[in-house]
Length: 367
Figure 1: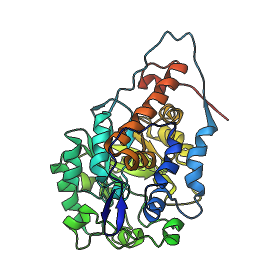
Figure 2 (figure 1 turned 90 degrees about the horizontal axis):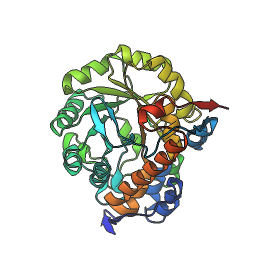
Figure 3 (figure 1 turned 135 degrees about the vertical axis):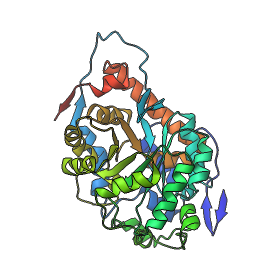
Figure 4 (figure 1 turned 45 degrees about the vertical axis):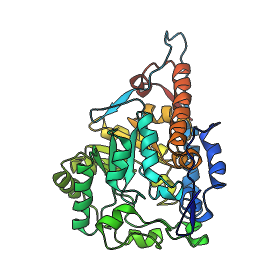
């Protein structure tokens, strides 16, 4: 274990046994300090939407197909011309140093080993450049919490482009922080500096709660901000936090290169719908004009399958990856992706689908 500012970090580096992704939470709780674990695991208010995110996958059922003449399902896919070994992505998630001393660097290594797409957060424990270097050329998207300070935004975007980011994820659903009761109970303040804040702003996030950090975030985000970010970065922009067909169409009208369906893992608007419950309607409105990334509540290969069959092109998750990080570093992250891929391949075989494109055309029954 490693200690920084009195906070104990895991420094484990090993493959882990994964029974299922849900089982990782309890194991991680045993080694991540209480405040850090509460920040990672908690949602907003009483966690209703957080719980619904996973329950919602039970609202549809996969129709099995037999006599399909297939074996050895393949998970290769692509987005924005980027070839990937799997449709499983790391959602951008803040402050992974709370789980492991190497933070996002080890997450990037694990995702690279899996041939998977990495999302890194503005509020990462490690810098944009260091996270990118750890991925050793593997594809990464940079997630922007848009600030009121456009000089700060420009610095981040320029750094992301310089580091080789393939796209910008503009988070639009976090103009303020949700009311996160676990952080209140634990009186949680970040014990570890956030590297991008250290480099590009006057503060570093250490000793602050998430609400204080979000105070610098832009409350007004408009469709024309999409083009402004594209002009500065020269990169595709994907709007993250879309939960309605109307907002998807607004984003497309603003020039977005992709739609990211997410409710921030149940951490923002408690009482809103599960992310999966809105996916099909958003996908219908998008009508293949741009690719769709989906996250929130994914814990099973069947969840990945159902999301793809409901209109997603890439399926992302964060908490189980961070638990794998705590339990085994880069190899722990890889172990989580490997297990989820194995579950997905089993579902693909039993549903008679050879490729990810086949999955996208699979039939679901709606309860």
